[in-house]
Image 1 (cartoon, helix red, strand yellow):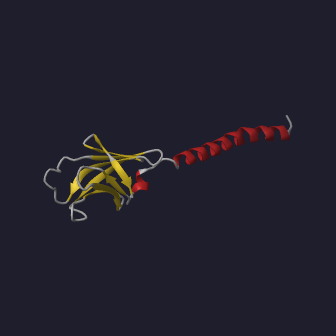
Image 2 (cartoon, helix red, strand yellow; image 1 turned 135 degrees about the vertical axis):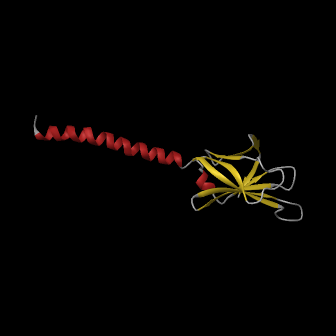
Image 3 (cartoon, rainbow, N blue to C red; image 1 turned 30 degrees about the vertical axis):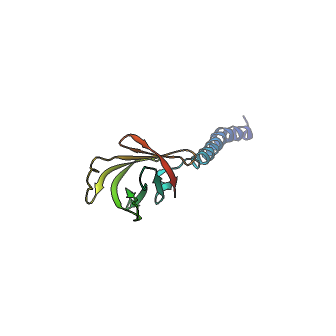
Length: 138
């Protein structure tokens, strides 16, 4: 075997898998741009629809810790109450509230919110396992 054919084989053995890997990573990265992650909704108000003046949830990150701020809107006042929950990032596309920070409002002790993000900018919210209607994201 001559030296040139040996080098050609080495190039093929090394370059083809390398090129395939680079190409696959570019396709995967392009697909991931279409997925809405928890980190991409930090600071955005998720407006929930209810029979009253409305509510919002906002995912916050402070010192590498996650929180969810719930605002309950009121008639005649912009925000009637706000509750801050500790939150756990379950995955890149899901965050779940844990405990309420500070004073616990009456009747709010066992609330668990789960916020799911996903493809095509979709957000879904669950309160104690029941899906809540998301009106908009601002």
